[in-house]
Length: 258
Image (tube, rainbow, N blue to C red; front, side, top):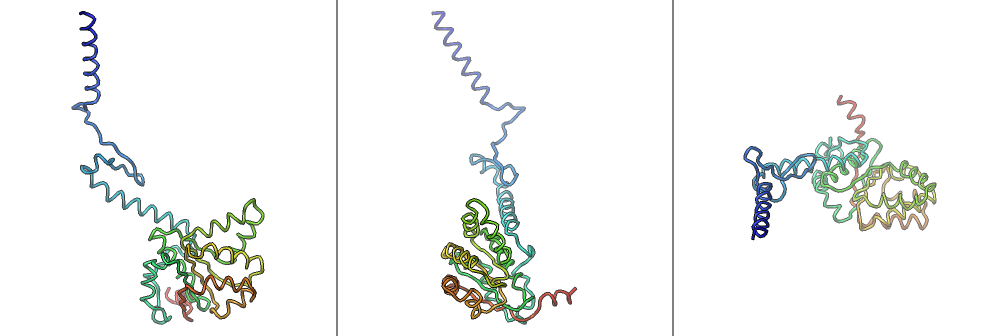
């Protein structure tokens, strides 16, 4: 009988101790469980209803952090470029409705390309950077690169193990790729092959922006006029929005405005 009483008493004491451990003390109230978003502590799912004011601020901070990171990694030549601050729109023959439509980035969902074509200094690079930045603000991965730098990166990739495949995989993965100074120099056969393979991988998977001085009628000849030129052109011209940036020299305009 004594053994039974002792076992019952011990079991009761253990239950009491567990109950006291689980119950918050009056002088040390339990804190809600938290997780962190962009460095900000917010309540977990079970306590969100009573701590909901934290969430909008945390979500906004997370979005800003995400977008800032995308813009930083986009390697923009003009990080401050903004489609809402394009100067001399009418004087340059630009269409505000077209710029507004581009700003929605719906063309990326359609895997549509864009060509900014115009004279030296007409603002092609600025528009390309502004469009890439806008894509980042819509949380697309974008990247800006000059054609000479793309060619140099390809030359360096050839000397590394699996370098060419990694190069093509990297530049094919961006939702929006801006190639500035497109066809500034005549590409040799090696570069033509690279362009064909890159554009083939990007076809129907992403959008490419070309910034160039040369009108479409000159592209085939500058690409070498061979079968590679035919193939490259075929992957660009059928689903592309062509925008003439005019003849105004925006560098001269910017210098005069200072």
